[in-house]
Length: 194
Ligand code: ADP
Image (cartoon, rainbow, N blue to C red; front, side, top):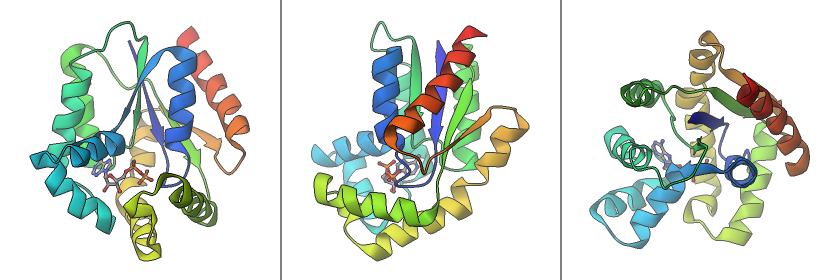
């Protein structure tokens, strides 16, 4: 089983690329944002906590998110050849928790596929998505700014975390969806050949 992370700021296109990757390689796509939005939709206890935080552009507590990911990773859906984790980990604490979780099952993170984008492009993509998906956290400019600020402060340090492990693989995320996907596939193909 291979484990790939898709990494990048809000609006970089992680969800879009993950969907394409999952389809081409028969990987299971695990998006913590998506899982949390499902919890909100069914009004679970986790969903009630998550709703308030997500709307403000703040993180959901680490232990809740780690618990959700653990449940998914420990319950393979059947037939998949690997995982693409999207939106997790988002800070060093979560990255260490993921490493431990995978170690318990005898696996590791194989590569981090990073969409390197510029903030102006991210903001444009989020504003475009707001009209299509109607997500509350995409609707307000202050919330978008807060999410991007948090990314730089709390999530971006993970670049070094994964560079130190020689797992960080960057693509120029400002390119088109198709161009990004071509670059990402080259990285995945190489990893699968190893
Ligand atoms: P984006 O990448 O555009 O921020 P996501 O769907 O990945 O969109 O995440 C939406 C929101 O869900 C985040 O702003 C955050 O509030 C919450 N969330 C998702 N993943 C995590 C995580 N790993 N840790 C904490 N909160 C998370």
